[in-house]
Amino acid sequence: MASAPRRVLISGAGIAGPVVAYWLGLSGIRSTLVERAPSLRTSDIHGVARDVIAKMGLVSVIRNAGTHEAGTHFVDHSNRICASFPVGQGMTNEIETRDDILRSVRRFDGLHLGDSIKSIKESEAEAVVDFESGQTRGFDAIVIADRMHSKSRSLAFQTQETPDSNSDFYYKSLGVHTAYFSIPYREEDGMWSRWGTATGRRSIWLRPVPADPSMLACLIIADPVAQLKLQDSRFLEIPEQKKIWRECFHGAGWKTDQISDHMAGADDFYMQEVAQVRAKGWSKGRVALVGDAAYGPSPMSGMGTTCAVTGAYVLAGELAKQPYLGRDEVAQAYKAYEDYCRPYVERAQDGAIGPMFLRVAWPESGLGVGALRRLIAAVSVVANSRLGKVFARLLPSEPDEGMVLPDYAEMQRHVDKNR
Image 1 (tube, rainbow, N blue to C red):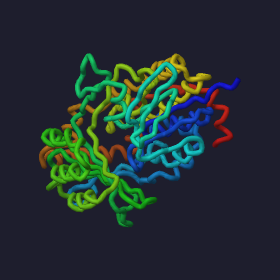
Image 2 (image 1 turned 30 degrees about the vertical axis):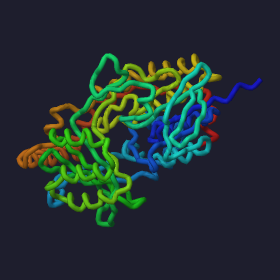
Image 3 (image 1 turned 90 degrees about the horizontal axis):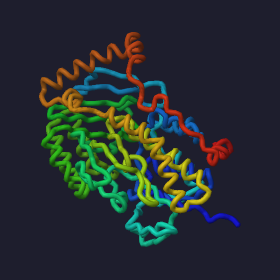
Image 4 (image 1 turned 90 degrees about the vertical axis):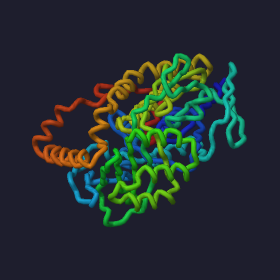
């Protein structure tokens, strides 16, 4: 007698969710992927996560779909270039989209934008989920792959803003807020991203995405007073959030006024606190967490997407190993996933930015901004020289150095024919 189909619900179509769905699909497990937001964002992929993308057969496709940035110019308030850092030749800077992953996922699974989990009720046989859309369905396993402040996660886990003996999770703030949105791209913008630093511990980063065409604008602020304003603003409507950001960047110079005007009409605006998610455990019952919802090391660690992709691959592999997904089998898969990935994730979190870095990278005064520009200019001269290549070999390795991805026979036999 054939075993019952294994049913998996994935909440979140950021990057971890689609990767989980992809590998489950290859192993014959049908999954449902729901995403609260009506549209999707892009991400950068580093380190061992590149091996996951290679296993998916998407390296060349995603590389061709990337931004193809030439590098980053650091500019002053008059848009004059102070320093330049050409992009590296590795995939670190080439894999910056999830569209092709999502297209691959759709061969196997359903993607539902604009819907989310309303409630979860577990029984011995299954987890029954009520959706905001009004549907009710049963699943064997639920994977929460949402953002750091996940509403779906709170249905199964207790989360606090600070460490608490009774909470499953807490947030460790790093004292920075960021906002992202698209603005129009012009031919004169070229293929270099531009980074401008202003007084008041503020920066603006503009990245070209000519395929759209558009520019990705990123506002960054580390001012303590602004942090207090922005911490509570995530509960406000987006127009109110934009208003606060405009106030915070008033008088920042460079292209601030123009960028603020475009922000007002942006339909993809997203803001977040730069923080880490610290957890006692990544699963409870039939619910597991992956990516930012479980262990986000912070956007500025440069490892958030890498941790998400790596964790998603291992989680999918451990679920695929189970011939059926009863309560004990699901618990076994979740434990194996956490045992394998937690040491790697903790190394990534421990390497996050500290207070001294914040003071140097985001100065308060004009004198500090001038000193930072001179420092960056000096670093760029060394980095672009032969001596810089020698120094690069002496830098600490990435947290995933030496980590070997497990191979899962349940998924591997399908890889070649689906590339």
